[in-house]
Length: 248
Image 1 (cartoon, one colour):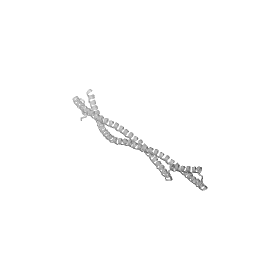
Image 2 (tube, rainbow, N blue to C red; image 1 turned 90 degrees about the vertical axis):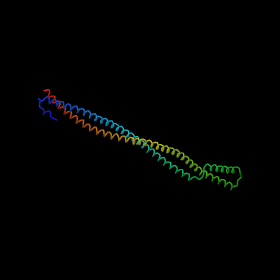
Image 3 (cartoon, one colour; image 1 turned 60 degrees about the vertical axis):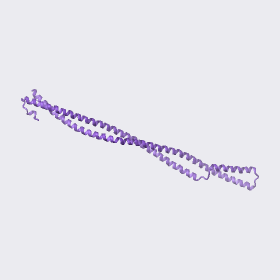
Image 4 (cartoon, helix red, strand yellow; image 1 turned 90 degrees about the horizontal axis):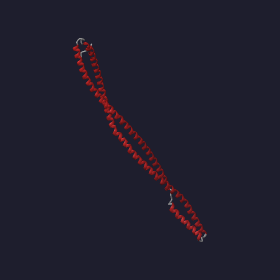
């Protein structure tokens, strides 16, 4: 390109021709600049939209993970409760087995039979003429039966204790079952949130990749725009310089 300074001031036709040439170049440069700006804006829009999607998906993943972690904490608590109940049940069943191993009979049946025997013996004492030996034998038998009844009373206490422990065991088994069911329900919920994270992650990576690509393209076109703006500015400076000379 011939510099304006090289043209002779009196050569008006040369200056006018040069001015037309520069204006044509400026129009062409402006058209290219507008195209480049459109491409730059296009990639900027894509980048911004995809970054917005990335932000939204990151928030979704964060929310899903937080909910999953909260549920997992509940699962741990439910498992601990279930384990504690099972330990308590084991202790109860051990105690029941210990009590049962020491039982000597059926308290209710034996007790009724022995009490009837005592009544029979007492009736004989009241209604029969007994010899000294017979009387002594009855007294001794009643004493033995009463001693046995005392033992049976203790056996009944054991049976009552066993019944109480069994009722407690049934209640605890129900609680353990509820805790186990809670673990299953919560595990299913946790898995649902985990699967949602897995589902979102590829979308997130895709939008990240797309946003990065769009940003690179934006930077490239921004560079072209700046270069075009500089060229256009230089052309306009030359145009204004020639126009100034032509006005003299």
